[in-house]
Image (cartoon, rainbow over all chains, first blue to last red; front, side, top):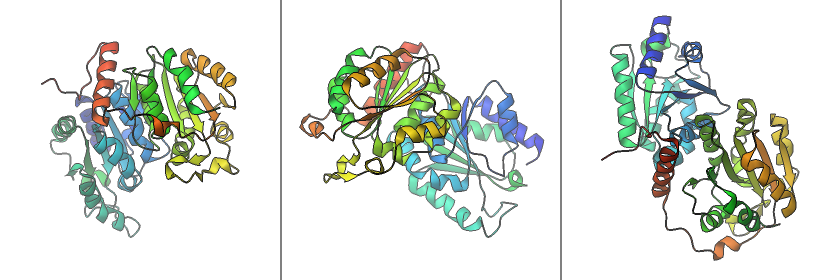
Length: 168
Length: 200
């Protein structure tokens, strides 16, 4: 992902009111991490498993923060139990910022990723988590704001799946 | 030592601390002993410690108490290095370690009944203040320190298996109701609204 797109993504998160981000680093969107780390608008929380990225974000939401989890699509499988019981059963909104490894438009797709990618949308559908695919930076800020408004309205995690231009 | 007598000591001492409980008999016992609005009764294994870490990070001026079980912590061991590296000086974790999956109804042993030592695992993960208590006197000392201390504490409480919770009537408050009551309590005591809670 080029630097300008990374900056716009981080700007979009800030302008949408996200202030607390848990993450396990991945390859597609990692350029956002130094920008978030340097921005005092955010608390950036490194974790050891995507499962706890979700539970820690849930705690922060209950404490009054608007939270996001940044992870790659493999991490959705790891986090699925936490997403189900904290996100859906308890009804805790959070934004899932997902590097969509293995998607059709993933510019680094490979036999290691394609099977994971092909199951990502069915997994989210099975969990009842709304999602949008973003393949370019068109109206990026507005699309992030739409997702945050939706997650709060639904009291549920909502996923933005970043593919295409974001995976170069 | 049984878990109920530990909780019986702790409950009346809670003032403005936020308390997160895991799924196990302790959830039923705590709901029976404490009507504190700052109780969050997480109804799933493997989630309470993560939620407590998130609360402690979001509200660093508030004391957060997590009531965990051995089975639940064993399901979320990744929390230990994360907690150690984040610090969370306002967080205290009590793990009531009865060494069985009591919910199995046939007392299937957990790993802590064998060779596994949760205190050693916490220390190995980097949590400096990790201790094990085996009697009520030691629990009372740790609990008193945890309520107002300024360092992350991880207290493994070795308890006998007790089925007392099966004799206690379950709370009529469901998960969503408890969540909103907790969030409203945080809003009121913090003096600011939570972004996701509706205003009609």
